[in-house]
Length: 368
Image (cartoon, rainbow, N blue to C red; front, side, top):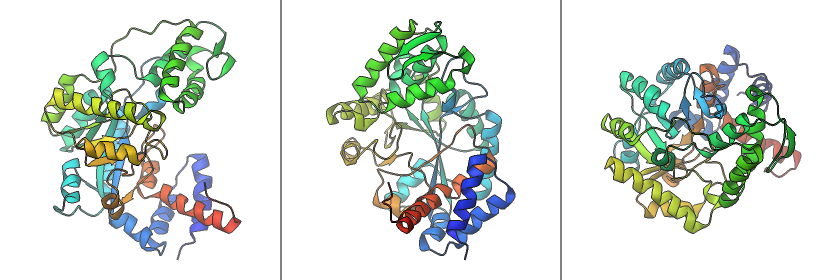
């Protein structure tokens, strides 16, 4: 039997280097396949792997937040090739039918999803999927589709990028010396991370204050959101549309009343514009603590039957059946080439999760 602690130690070294050799992949498969526990074996065979993309672009538009890009078009195609070798693609309808007592899902079922509703989902990802006969679920934040405005993190990145001053007093960060415009991604990341954890109203106020502090007017530029005509075309071609709120707040940072309104507004706009039932939802940000049982009940009341987080998967089918309003997904980032993504799909995050608990127990420490 493979030693989980030894494998995880090696994995940690490799993740720090962002380098994954064939031997690392072999150890990943061996560790997960022969870990000896029912969990390890079931994770590969009786699981639902849900993959989460955001943007599919060669280069993010000047000033916008580049870290929301998941893959270039070429890398996305490589991902699909790799996933097709190891998994069997399913649709949201397949999962909903299974959840309702219908046909069983295939071994190593994999569901493709996209968040936010960027235009490149239509212009780039949709043609690639259609050419391959694949379907995906697109969770769209409807507010920026209606207004054409930037999503808040792109607006923050743009304001920081456009600032002309050398030294500025930024809300949440204080006085900073600005690097050249093409070197401000790390500063934008810091500001976005600080703003994201604020209560929703405070985050919106901080964004207004940011515009004032850098003396930049909200930019006018072509929308990067998909249009409703594009969304309808995708739905007519077999893609599924799901809810992602209207304004993309972190739900737990809002009052229950405001959260319900934002959820309902997003679902209603999709139903009005596309004329189809909406039975799925993805929580904005989607980490533990970003949503709770109150939000799950709201979704159930509004006709949603499946809701997805960004707590890392894969998910055991038994977990999905027990809590269909907290389905795990695997986040895909720009640094995920096919080898790195394969390791994620094999469940490395969950192995490390278990190892962390084991180490905590060994050290007599509480796992947090």
